Amino acid sequence: MDFALDDTQQELRELAVDLLARDAGEDRLREAGLLGVCLPEEVGGAGLGAVGMAVVLREIGARDLPALPVLAASLTITRYGTREQQARLGQARVSTVALKEPGRAPADPPETRALYSGGWALTGRKCAVPYGAVADVALVSAAEGLFLARPDEVVPEFASTGEPLATLVFDRTPAEKVADDAEGALLIYMTAVAAQASGVLAGALELTKDYIKTRKQFGRSLAEFQAVTMQIADVYIASRALDVAMWSAAWGVDNQGPAGDVALAAYHVSEAFTALFTCQHLHGGLGLDVTYPLHKSFAHAKHLSHLLGGADAQLDLIGALA
Image (cartoon, rainbow, N blue to C red; front, side, top):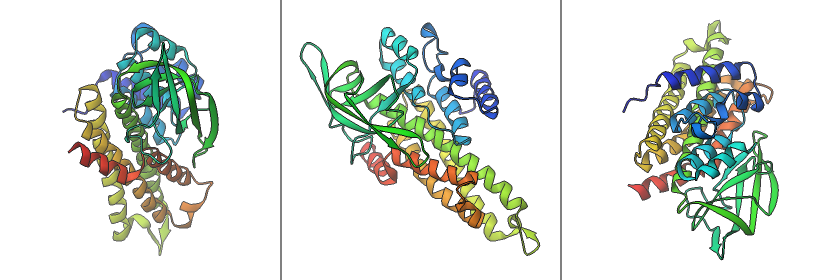
């Protein structure tokens, strides 16, 4: 496996870096085509896969910007939906993925049910849905498969990052079937979260490296102390491990690789959250200042870990797939 970006992916990364460096908003990202990179060319996309999705989300994460579920939703509908469904999702201003249920990890079998009687109808509840309150359409997992639907009731939630989440309630809600199972959507969603987390940790690592180079104690920079270099090395190792696991997961989603690669990447998301503790420690009291960028990175990493259900949930999944 060669995880090096090809020319198209490298150009995509450079475009993302350029736009995000100029604080481009969601509308500008959409105009530039970044939010449609996963849709097929026939409906106005770029036809790129999970690696393309990961390229964009990693750069978004490195700047601690809110998650964009439209990328995971677009890739999912491209893989499993009809051309009409792809076109409809491409025209939606905001689309999202609703997989998590109260008290359950996303990888747990869904309790939401879909009954067929002249048409499909969903009954169940999904929580922590990114942008669920403003989404035009959601991809919803159920025991009977994956569906496109709009909820009957929306209960706003908010993440520790301030990102808008929602609980979506379905009560015999009309739905449109996309796939016979939701496993593919789950793998794409987990890969998307891992990609964003890898960017968050990479950004926090760079911020911490710059800080320990310039912060002085006893007439020397912190980077000159062995205890400090050992701790920043641990963060670097965690960052590289997450990167490798994430690119392997994205490559696997594009090439029918083992689901265990995605579960491993998701596990390393929780390890990334742990590494943020070290970054905070190396900043001393400044690391707890809510106006300092590291605080946002810490909250972001915690949020992404919670979206996946935490390390134990991923270890359970890895064991089940072994």
